[in-house]
Image (tube, rainbow, N blue to C red; front, side, top):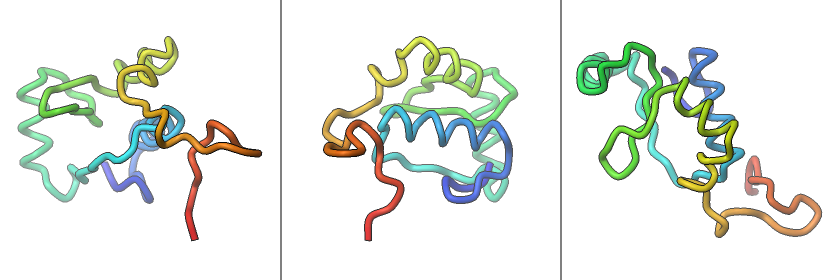
Length: 100
């Protein structure tokens, strides 16, 4: 719901924060509020009624609650995080918020 720059729900905002902290880049987001057919498809396919849903390599990975559980155990960083994207130096291990 919304975009990474402007999430329209608390759940979407939490997902963006988790993916950012896990260093999960690049990723593609789809605003299901602008494309309700996609929301209908993913809810039907996964049998879960809570968006957002994360797909990885074309397969359903987790919904908000599943991602939160994986994030809390560290599994999210292991599964989709990338050492190559982590910064070094003073802010080592943190994802840069912006590059200018």
